[in-house]
Length: 112
Length: 114
Image (cartoon, each protein chain N blue to C red):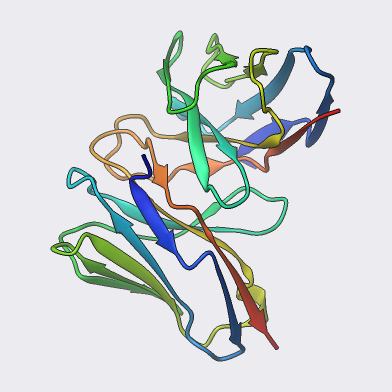
């Protein structure tokens, strides 16, 4: 059972565009929602994270929007650059410890 | 430099053979994890350990085994019982019991059955 559903699977945008990646979760006990960025052949690295007590968090060009009632959250990348081309994973965890449940990933390509 | 080191980067296994993937961390983290990554399926949890000499099964533990004899090390053995072991394996660590703390990942081991 996939507890975190991510869409789209792949996304192509032009440089300067604003790609949006969406995730939906089922378990209302989740209380931590990070996004990870992964380049080919590398391990994922934390990009930005949000807790359900806020509706939006921004770090540089990356913004998370969170809708607790809809059990959805999304990642927006402002002024996207070719260097942002990577696979992005949303994730969720609950309580203490970091047993992350990951979405299926979105492969983003930003064209010059 | 602090971090997580996985070795080898590439590993080839023959049918019916057990192989062990290494994961070492010098971040002084109590918790360590193993994930499997397949195309289009995200990362799935194999095993995790919150403390030395203790570990728990994740969602897809069948065909795998682990040990946690030292805080710094969490090796994963892929046994012959794992019917489809070809995948990218990722090790991670974090502060145990920390509320919403970051998980740090290694660079992965790509295992191929030949």
